[in-house]
Image (cartoon, rainbow, N blue to C red):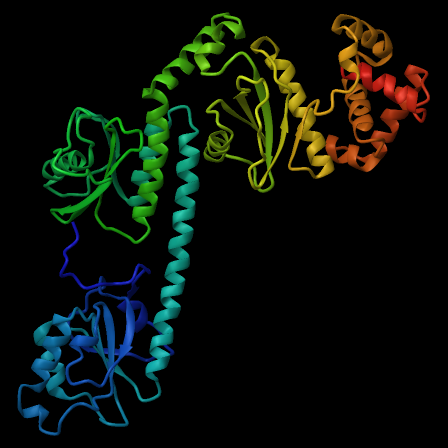
Length: 507
């Protein structure tokens, strides 16, 4: 747990003092104090106060020109008291500007900094304090950019690991690699389910491993089988340091007692974010495998693979008698497993499949047989008509055509059969027989059939049909002309188009 008396520092990445000393344009020189490469500063602050303690938050490079130094300071305890107060306030280093007040850094100040272990930098006359502050912020901005890129790359790699055939071990391996330590998944009873990486503790690995398991018990919900004191709300995360190793534990969101534990030799600013992403992914993975609905879906899959009919397993999927199929395509990059899961959550179904650039979702249609769906921001969707489990394949084809039409017309969502027209007046069997007769000359050529269907649905637009089918407009013209020739039909005639559209919607 954090120490309440610890100095407050900003959430931005710190800057190594060595990086600041390495700037040739500043010409800074360390003349006293420890030369530790791990020394960092969080900001630069200028003060000519004799006692700057009340104005320091900790982690500063304090800059002064020595205006506050009395003439007789060198023979008394002034510098000892001054430096001790800076150290007590958590100051990281002291920068002393040479000229115009002092020609050299006072010798007594050098000795005081050596005595109290405070790095002392000599700031040459040509370097302004504002220039030093600007350099600090430039280094901080660069470090922040580097850290954001590191976190982004880690998020992408964790998402990719979650999509592998062995998602839980893959996520743990990737997380351990990204934080440079060890990641472990603990079961509700406190036992270690899986782990990856090495414990960063020379000679104290057993002690650290025990401390990490104990920390996991702190965040495990009471009554889940292996932890929780019940004496108040259980925290969702906790941290500690044992034998110089940074430990963190995260309760997974399934509420079943699974906990992610992370041990690392160092704790960078982005590590908490990276570990939190890993915890979210593991929550999804453990929830899927351990929940009752997840077990039911696994049972349905096994039965389908063993030859059961879709209508026999539909009840295990948590839906009713009618379903809709949704095809969705993002406006940006190709979707990954995490984006697909998020889309399924918005649409209200965990039955999600990523198929290249398209995500397919099987959604219960509800008791009324019609599910009111809206396209989430950043997605273009095609929705099938409500179908029974036996017609899931038909719904899949309908959703695919609806998505193509939505993209061609730049609509956010298109639903198949929004305007049923007069088709319901003709018995289905007679309509299907009529369709087979009319379309017989092109029935064996799927490219011609789909091109004619899309061209008619888009009111004869060559350009929009080309976009929907991802072909050149000349290809569309050639295919439509071929259809007209094989069908011996005048495709400019409205009655002919209506007859063909009726046939195509009943194939």
